[in-house]
Image 1: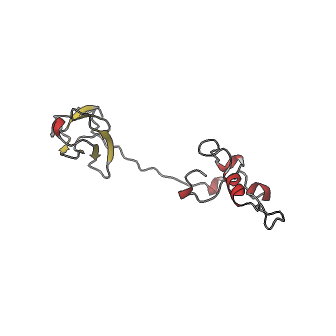
Image 2: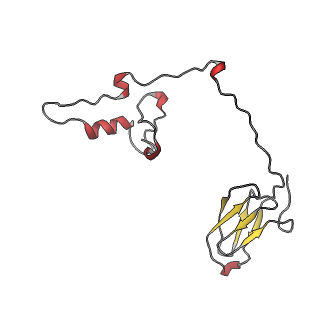
Image 3: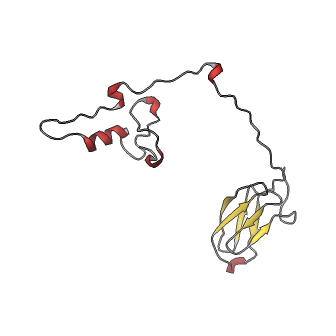
Length: 150
């Protein structure tokens, strides 16, 4: 079972189930479940039937046009994208090592990577006005360190 802690169903060997055999287990999840819970008593007391054996695995569903979702994209381009540049932590090589995060002006944040031993990192995907955060400092990206490519 792939990512069983988030699974909404147990997979089968049916081709449409998205089974990922060979990645984390040799066969379908039901093979593992059947082997673990089958009744090994000489006089069988219960029988486990897989979805394949019960004919319970649905085939491909074809949606008619009126049932298909209507999606309107509202993506916006952030603009002012900086060309990749070498960022140097103001704390320098003596500053604390660790992760480097970018906090965009729009929302959220993302990790760029870890500082090298000399206190630098290649910053990619950063925009003018974003804030670069390290364990030791915060720097707002200005035109002094950013060349706009977009």
